[in-house]
Structure formats: structure tokens, C-alpha cells
Amino acid sequence: MGFGGISIWQLLIVLAIIVLLFGTKKLRGMGGDLGGAVKGFKKAMSDDQNAEKQASEDKTEQIQKSSESTPIDSSTTSKTKDNDKV
Image (cartoon, rainbow, N blue to C red; front, side):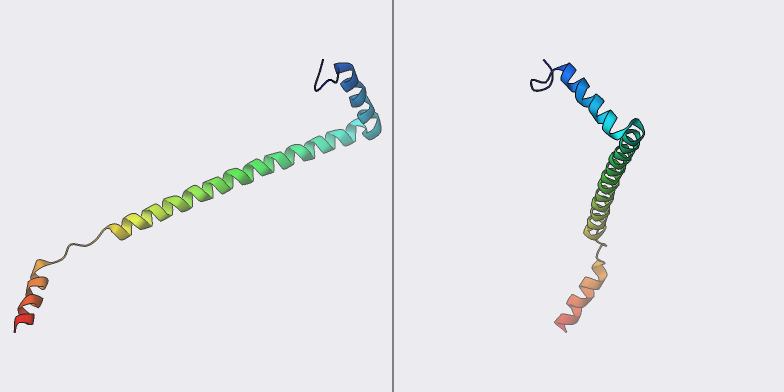
């Protein structure tokens, strides 16, 4: 028993009919086109994932840079307090 109740002999007969209808040259070309399409799809998916990772890393760097603060000079704060008293 094969795939879903189809025997191996039935699959071979269907394959032979397909080869007779389309020819080996056309089937080879279609297979190459299909393989190229799958390869292009995988490449696009990996490029998209890399772009998402890069964008998230950039956002993380921006957050880290914005959270860093410069130390406040205590002398300027005390001067402004003195000026307020006057």
C-alpha cells in the first residue's frame, strides 16, 4: 500500500503518462524553475530575518545610548540654589 491507498504501480503509471505528455526536457526545465523559486524564497526569508535582527539590534543600541546620562555637575546646582536665595 502506498500513499493514501495508491499502490506503487499506480504511481509509476501516472509518472509514465506525465513523462509522455510533457517530455523529459520540459519536466527538467520545470524542475529547475521550481528549484530556483524555492532557493529564491529561502534566500528572501533569510534576508528578511537578518534585516529584522539588525533592526532590533539597532533599537537596542539606541535605547542603551538614550538611557546613559551625563553626570550632573554639583557646582552648577549649588550656584543656582544660591542665586534663588538672593
